Image 1 (cartoon, rainbow, N blue to C red):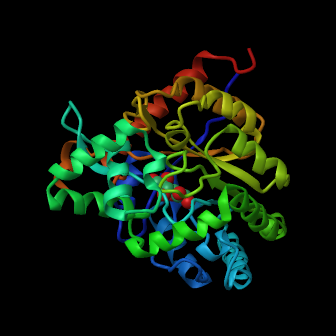
Image 2: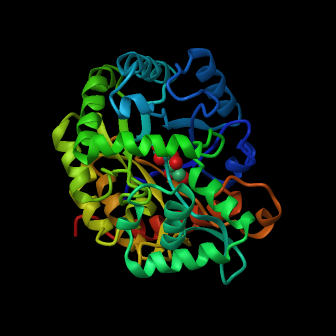
Length: 393
Ligand code: DNO
């Protein structure tokens, strides 16, 4: 039996990306994942802007297959201020991307910060550079730099002690870089100032995990009609890392969280971006098992791997290395694909900065060669499985 392949895609940050569309073409990915990073959160994505991006992609012989992301404004996440107006804007942006033929949209519902890392250029034994999340460094930031009220309660004594020691011995430059890394959002988008983060932490404390879950359901219920009418699939990106940090609630971190929201808003366009790197950093997350449980609503996939340490620290490993069994994940994905009419888009997520890219300016995690290695490995894995396994056995 010949299996239907997944769709290979590649994230492109737009004209400011240091990896060009011509480079992507050579990597062999046909689909592009892109967004209007220059448009401030909450503002309308205009038809003209979208059309321009689409044409640029198509001129390079590629196709814009996924929008990642139309960011959800903080006022929608907290359901405050002008959130009703912002929901209308969001719906119109959805109509506009749909008019350009892009029908898969990624978003996240992480409070204030998007993905969080403490180190963006950790040298690996092979000389390449990787992204790290270090629990002690996070504690150091939380307790000694952010000085969040009650922060100490979130760490055990050993972590606090190590954080204190590291803080006493650190150079100012290192502390500044740590702060910058944690406050950084998506490449090309604005970072949040420290004071703003403290204010937001207070706001989310009042909302709590349950409140945030309700706000997410409200957001989804508000946009589902438009999605159905336009044939759009929404895909929520899991929390990265998948646990509460800095006192901020995280509600998309494990199997139960994903199942909860799929059931709560039980409509076809309410789907998941299955990010193996994000979910993979959760201590008890069994990725193939989660995929089996929510697979019918997985409309977009990020594939990468992490290696966890004893505390909550982890680093980004090579795509087929790390704690997640990528063979099992790929096998399950190919199985899910067989019942779909359209190929499920996946992208090689992140990659080490390696070879020639070590001498270049690259967006953290989004170097050309590291991702190319990831894509090539994943492509081979998928082909190997397809040719040797009859899905359904
Ligand atoms: C990090 C990315 C995330 C992702 C957003 C989706 O590399 O996977 O920033 O794009 O969370 O909304």
